[in-house]
View (cartoon, rainbow, N blue to C red):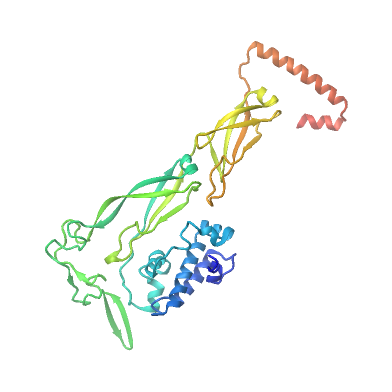
Amino acid sequence: MANKRDYYEILGVDQSAGDEEIKKAYRKIALENHPDRNPDDAAAEARFKEAADAYAILSDKEKRARYDQYGHAGMEGMGGGGGFSNVDDIFAHFGDLFGGGRGGGIFEQFFGGGRSRSRRGSSLRVDLQLSLEDVAQGVKKTIEISRSEACNNCSGSGAKPGTQPKSCSTCGGHGEVINNQGFLSIRQTCPSCRGQGTIIDSPCPNCRGRGVTPKKAPINITIPAGIEEGHVERIVGQGEPGDKGAPPGDLVVVIHVEPHQIFTRHGDDLLAQITTRYRQAVLGDSVELPTITGETVVLKIPAGTQPGDRLRIRNHGLPRMDGYGKGNLVVQVQVTVPKKPSSEQQELLLKLDEIEQASQKKTNKKKGIFEKVKDIFQ
């Protein structure tokens, strides 16, 4: 860890840099050190991977905040940077940044059609509903998605069983044609095979020549404790398959947290309300309260507690996403006022009122006129 360079230093930006500045810096370094531009250059490939790791952290709001606070130590357990094992992983993850494909867009302008033009698969989105209890303890969920998978009838070839796709005669199986215009040579997608390089004369009746059919797929996902509403979890490689062996897309899981009947979330804190009797608020008391995890805690109500006062029970809120401690349980006190007091209650309240008035008269004798007026309007 001591040998790792600072991510901001790698991209050549300040810690205050905005998202667009970070993206622009990464694109520049990626273009300069692209493997096609620097063949057999291990140092350039290392810089290419290093920049991708830095961008994977600094382009993610939560990871960047954690890195700013704890440095590389805060990335432990999160796969370091992007966790890229090779250059293809980087293209699969950030291909859209450069226009799709393996590098695609801007990369293609510099390096031509040397690399595969097969398109990466589309990403899929799932909205996942969680309870506040799930957020408090973390949870493992199995979600079922519908995505395209290789057709069982033709094994993904798209051709009717017993037949094979044949090489496109227009482009010779390259998927593109070259038009010479003077001293310029312009590459274009083949109009006959639409870039596939093959033609299917007898399509598979099951998939109609597409090579894929829709199927249900169960996906296991682990939700960490403390996750927030609107958080986006990206599961790499679980989206739609790519063309001709190109990388699949990702599965994007958007987290939603259902409202709770008792607790309201405020960051890492939980807010709840309790109703106390008049005697408890005046003289103080101890009451047992359930927490979001199901355990019971004792809340001490101080003597003289006022309606609306908030009492804090430390470390009984939600776990913090950085793994360091928990928020608090904040309890707001409301005092019960009987709507139809009994005759005995009325008698006791009248006696109490007499005592309070007598006590107030003694206190007022010692106060000046401005203090008395102030007391009336408080």
